[in-house]
Image 1: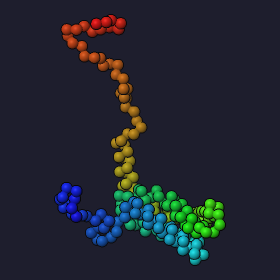
Image 2: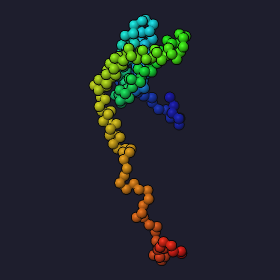
Image 3: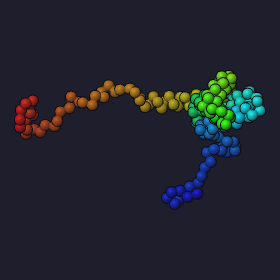
Image 4: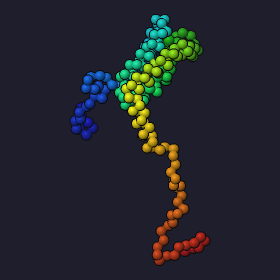
Length: 184
């Protein structure tokens, strides 16, 4: 493949290592969790097995935690609750279509599903945290802490006053300095 300036550049495949294993980005891991939540949520509704929705989400969480590259583990660890909510809303929206008032069906379905599958959310989140800790999450936390310590976002410098009273305009030797109220 040719680059912008006409030179050919070798393409590397960051998603696969030398051993041929797949390494997802943080976003890819989130997509895996969301996809598992939606697919198994729909299967649970159609087959009448509510446990399938939670178990499928937990399995998607474990798969994403194992397949996400180590540099993106911090992104993955914080996302299961929001992904779970998103997949639940998507499943309830898909199943509420054509079944009466959409907004009412969606609201009741989401609240009932969240209430009944909340333990699976906690289990999936715990799985992600434990697996990511074993895969090097603390290294990412240390790196983030070090980066933030170097930035000093909200600290003020001691001498940060934009008005410098100790600075005076340059005075030439020939010309005397004017005092307040004098005219040149």
